[in-house]
Length: 98
Image (tube, rainbow, N blue to C red; front, side, top):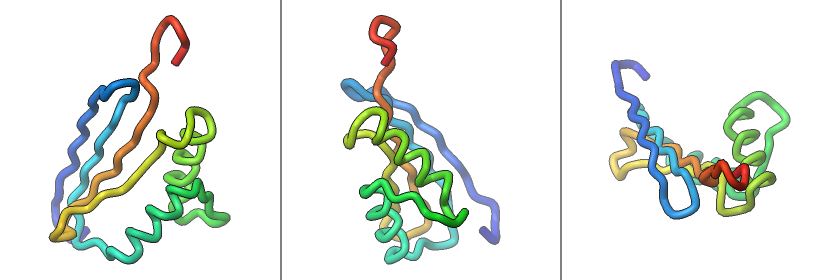
């Protein structure tokens, strides 16, 4: 970014999962690349190089350990001035261990 922005973190429990919303401002989102990344996240893709490796790795681990309804998805606003990473993780219970 070329200027100051903001970051917001909101955590909610929705039914049987914890949903974390991390919203960042940005100078503009390339919506084509954004859609391409979301498709890779949906398919549990892990890149061979370091570009986005952490994001894809965490997403794949969430899906592998807990199922396809968990993982990471990216959203952006209509003006493409901010984007949100949505992380879905199962709610953990002391009785079951997750």
